[in-house]
Image 1 (tube, protein in one colour):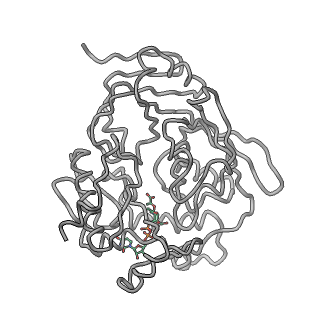
Image 2 (spheres, protein in one colour; image 1 turned 30 degrees about the horizontal axis):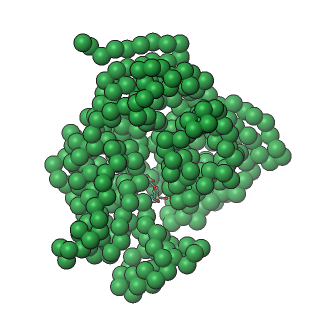
Image 3 (spheres, protein in one colour; image 1 turned 90 degrees about the vertical axis):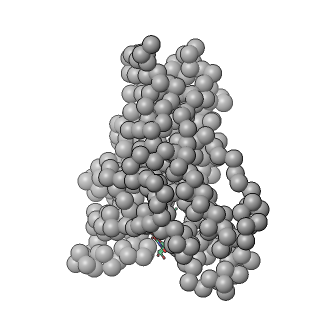
Length: 362
Ligand code: EPU
């Protein structure tokens, strides 16, 4: 029987849907059901459908932060609501409500065209507005959390729409309550607080140099965005040209004892001291140091331009990509005794390999 396609007002439901065009690593996986929703208000009705309500659920933005190592046996929901509403002004600030389905980079460019300040360092990040709070997207010295007023979501535990003020979202480095409990909330909209004349963040390495080379001495938000765009396009592969999910590994955080030991053993390893006395370490530097930058196994590879980026050169399967990522983690652990964590969601969740398994080979 050919796969079913059911049309409901504002909803498209597809059985046995292909996912290759719905994940930026371009993995050829499928899902049992896919639901595309033009309006978040239809969510409760779709989730309650008898054919769907017992299935495992995954919410996908534009698939730029996920690695499918197998087919998804359940329902995938994609929200396509992308409206921007002006909610009011408080002195210097403008309040906006943006639908979860809006492509992130479109919002950044729209805000720049309005002369608003706050999102300029986050230009060119793939993904949707609804995905942005989940891993608290960040780049060039700025995290999205600082511009978020509140997150609107469907709470599957309480079975109602909720509004979570930013202070209740437990935002951290590539982290939030939504990332920790992916089953609980489906983000439907995000409210942002952007400034008309806010301070610009230009201290991240390379921004001021880029502005100088553009001969800009009185930068505005658009200029910072232009500088960031140039830095990003030089280093990070474009998912439209080569399958990737941005940084595949997080920069690991270690405690003060470990940071001090590494400072002696590996004096060139970049460290960013943290408030608790520990340090965040450059995962890219460690991956390059163990010779994995540019590594390739079939079509699975590590970018030759940026060591944090796992790339699909053609038809690598999710399992092949994950096997390569595991090789990288093992090599880094052998030399630095530091375990790298994947930044995207790896689905189904892999069984962690105990670190002892690796150290036995030393
Ligand atoms: N480095 C290397 N080899 C490389 C790349 C970088 O040794 O191949 C070292 C260099 O010493 C460099 C340092 O790493 O100075 C930092 O590099 P970069 O500025 O590229 O930042 P990152 O820590 O590697 C993070 C984010 C990126 C974000 C950049 C810029 C994470 C996991 N990644 O990378 O985010 O664009 O900072 O702010 O925090 C993403 O999340 O998908 C992403 C691309």
